[in-house]
Length: 215
Ligand code: SF4
Image 1: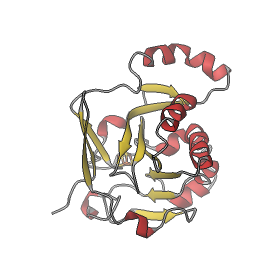
Image 2: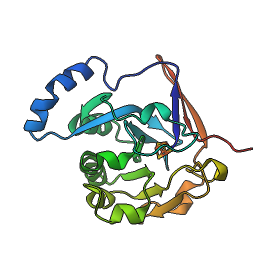
Image 3: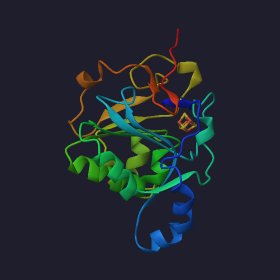
Image 4: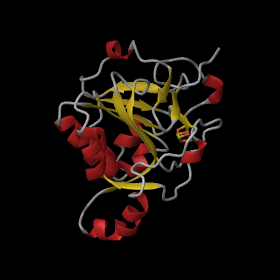
């Protein structure tokens, strides 16, 4: 997964998080799908083609040696938001090319992310998603919501991070990871200008994202 590092702890929407956790039971009863995020960026150039909103989900069942996002592995409540709220924030930036999902393990939240991805694609935008699972596992039917989620992913980057195979392949941390162009709406030529690392600066924080450079 592309790493994310920030000098300031950021909330998805400050002040709303505790309220959303408090109301989560009622929201589930109201059939609102919830996401448990570790972090997010409204705009990034290093996480797929074009400028994209990026979500890092909280929780991963894998434990790759030298994982770049070790704070995101534990399954615990972090920033709980509704799919509706994320969708609203995304829709306020019509110039975005799409959304990217990283983690953590996005397929641990396949049902809610599938709903969000379907809405994003419905606007003619694209979805990029990383997963530690292989595509064949995701298609196998054992992971709740995975097949439906896959139908709304344009580019899947699959496979665990293997430290001994670390390299500089685009959008990948190690050479075993694979690119799957699932829809035809993103192609290999779209990946040529993606920076490997990026610093996002705003009034409140400096955020570093991307992949380590293997020298
Ligand atoms: S699958 Fe990704 S997030 Fe999970 S441990 Fe491996 S590198 Fe880290």
